[in-house]
Length: 219
Image 1 (cartoon, rainbow, N blue to C red):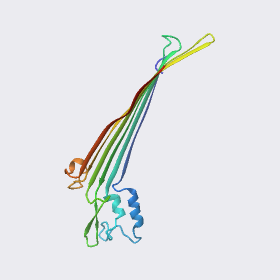
Image 2: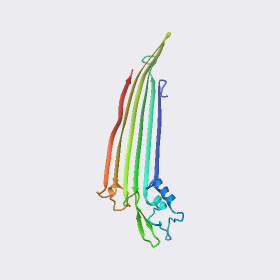
Image 3: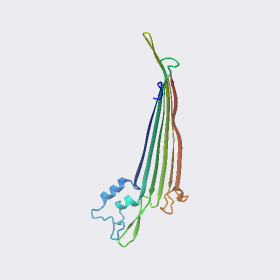
């Protein structure tokens, strides 16, 4: 309460979640672990990731296939007020609410083929997601929603009669954008940035959207 006639409220909610996983999805990793022979050894005698007849090494897949990182953020704030306007006429009041919601998602998938070694230290390159080269897939998605509403209320009793009236206004707007990039022409997997690749095997995309916008009056 600000004054005897004015009340104001504010609510804020924020969340951020980070998810870090292997470059290869969990399903094929578990599938390869189940399919592996029970006598299969993930490491050879020299301590390197073992190669057995060209089969994937599920232990190597968890740490050598790259990464899949996701960051999800959300923010919401709502402010409301109520102002009694008895100074103008008894029973009159004005109420209003303003809210904003923002959601954003950032995903970065960096797939890197990995090496398995035989006991004689001969190396063999294993594909990741059916690719024998490094791949970077990066996506950004942001959405905003803004809502404004107000109501002018009148309630008063005259003798045995009750009189009430209301006028309403609401405004809603949704907007956002999506942007993504995919590149494979990397000389090395040391630097995991889109600008570190060459000009071959690349695709970029992006859209900006106004999902919904409207104004409503009732009175």
